[in-house]
Length: 84
Image (cartoon, rainbow, N blue to C red; front, side):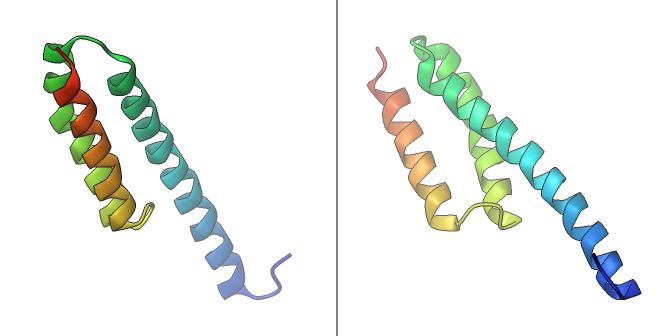
């Protein structure tokens, strides 16, 4: 357990950020799974900008690495373009 006030504050901050990051990462993963499981091209294209924005936000706040974000976006775009 933390012995200093600054360590206790750091613990509170890191726990709050961890829960915040976990929520947004899980929400984004669910959106990615939904778009990958869809077979309707129109629906996939409609949700594409929203999912891309979610991925970009995770990369911006350093929840995921920027290269991982680029790879995710590339894979999703390939999937959506391959739908007929």
